[in-house]
Image 1 (cartoon, rainbow, N blue to C red):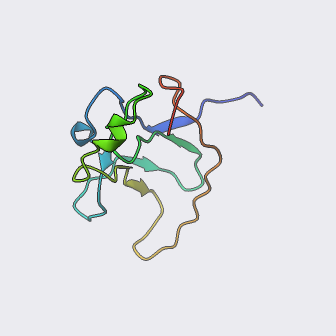
Image 2: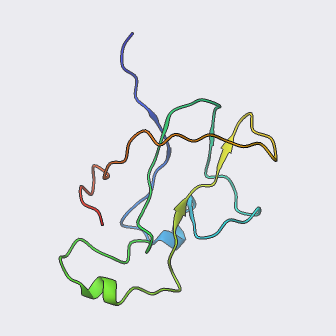
Length: 108
C-alpha cells in the first residue's frame, strides 16, 4: 500500500490579516460557518496561526509582543463539520503531530 497525501482541510496565510481569512475566527458562535467538512475517522491537516493573528513577526524584536493589540487576539482555525456527528455527540480528536508550516519554519 502506497503513501497518500493527507488532505488539508484548513489552509491559512501569514500574509493576509487574520480577520480577513474565512477559515479563522476568534470566538465560538453557532452563526460562524464551517471552514470545512471532515469525514468520521478521517486524518486531516489543519493549519493554524498564532493567538495574536500574526501580530508577532519573525524579526527577533520584543516590540511586537509589547505592542500586541489585545482587542484582536484568540484566533482559531475552524469550526469544522464532522459528517456523521449529531448535536450532543462527544467527539474524540487525536492530535497526531504539530509542525511549523513549510512556508514559515519558525514559531513562538
